[in-house]
Amino acid sequence: MVEPRFQIPPCPPDRVARLQRELAVSEPLAQVLVRRDLADPLRARTFLAADELHPYTAFAGVEVAVRTIARHLDARSTITVHGDYDVDGVCSTAVLVRVLRELGADVDWFLPDRGTDGYGLSAQTVRRLAARGTKLLITADCGVSAAREIALAAELGIEAVVSDHHAIPADGVLPDAPIVHPVASGYPFRELCATAVAHKLAQALWELRGRDGSELARDLDLVALATIADVVPLQGENRALVRRGLAALAGTARPGLRALMEVAGIDPARINERAVAFALAPRLNAAGRMRRADAGLELILTGDQARAIELARELDRVNHERRAVERSIRFEAEAQIEALGDIAQRRALVLAGENWHAGVIGIVASRLAERHHRPVVLIALDGERGRGSGRSGCEAFDLLAALTACGRHLHRYGGHRAAAGVEIERGEVAAFAEAMQSHASGVLAECDTAPVERVDAVVGGGELGMALAQELQRIGPFGHGNPPVSLMLEGAAFADVRTMGEGRHVRFTVRARGGTARAVAFNNGGRLPVAADEPTQATFALEVHEWKGVSEPRLVLRHARPAPLPTLAADRRIRTTPRRQQLALFA
Image 1 (cartoon, rainbow, N blue to C red):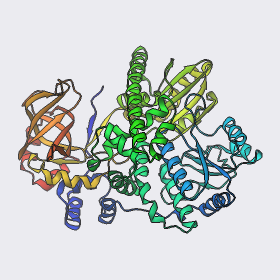
Image 2 (cartoon, rainbow, N blue to C red; image 1 turned 90 degrees about the vertical axis):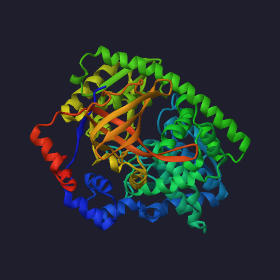
Image 3 (cartoon, helix red, strand yellow; image 1 turned 180 degrees about the vertical axis):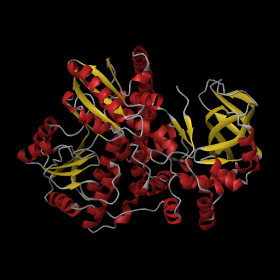
Image 4 (spheres, rainbow, N blue to C red; image 1 turned 90 degrees about the horizontal axis):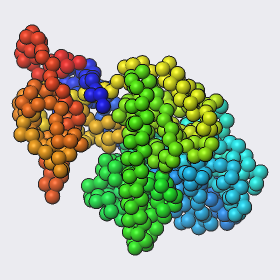
């Protein structure tokens, strides 16, 4: 994998000083804010507060949606919540099903099978629901692009309410039904996940029936879980929802989530966004990827402790199975990439394989896109048709727009700017690959596919204590759209290098101007990219590490390379420049 180039955005010292003065923050935190386009004190203060919340009434038309649902509640109609097979689809379904149950509804659910049903609401499913007596269909995490299917439901006597967050179809045709959607409904914040949308809809319905909407704050645990798992930007209202939701998750009363944390080895009192992303979400997703997602939904909804433990263990086993399948597919996909020759000549990668598991290719596409820093679409071929999953790989690429441009080769597609799914005829795969390559070549420059390590702050070794580690947590929660803080150390050198974790990781000491600090580097085969005591240009994350009841600051190596040799004039300039003015030298 190509090491990234360091990018250090401008950081005017006067703006740093102003934030330090008006917000009473440290110089490194002020640097982070300035480099993240938050130099205005009011914007910076708002960001750090992470309290942007909007009422459900900000969804235009939500009143029509809840009155429709209330009418079916009063009529004792059979209501079906149609979700999706990923974490966001499962959690949004759980939010609506539980609220409807507590309001006395006759409610069931339908989660599509990834292999046989594919993504979203299908005509086949609509006919199946009509046959079993559904009178009201509520979609969760799907439906905004299902105008024909919603029309078919109306013909078959099923009324519908759509709650979704996916991109509006390119042709602009929306279902003829009440819609609760951040964009279609003109909501002030457009990046909500489907579970957050369902939560707002549930609040509206709850209050229409005379209940206190604040009681549904209990569902913020699911909102946080889905927001992180669905990789929507952790900005604006999403930051507020995740902060509150992580606190709710730490104290959740759901037996299923507590059992899932137990099998994943997660201490609820120390739950954070990383634990959700890498421990809880993969286990919940495993059910929908490898089998059916209903096990994940039952886990969330059950009140039975014994059943919760049984389901959590089942999901843990399925997740181990998923990881083995993922490794196999990734090995084959990397072999295909190597066979293509010079990858620098290809702006997009479209790979297809026989017997690839359709539920796992999305994870592999994500890993490959991250590794190669360019859009990747993986297609699992089965008979004359294939199902594919893609990731954009870089901020400059809009994957959904690319699929729209190549749509003549696709049977069906949908998703977001960063991630999407496709269905394609076998005979169209080669033409689709060429069309994607042509489109990507037209919109991506070579620099767009070159990895970049964006530096947030340049610091000295003497600043790397617990106080800064705790202060930087104010930037969180971290994730897509709000990455972890990257600190560059001035004049760093590594020493006391020792392997750990059976030789997979390294622990070492970092010496930099003004002090030393403990550091670790993960998954590097026991080797550092630079020699001990060699002048180094390195970036780190600074975290609060907790182990056996002890908390301490810890540096986690991100990237390192030998420091470029400065000219005598440049070296003298850096050494003799006052600290505050040095910030401008690293711009």
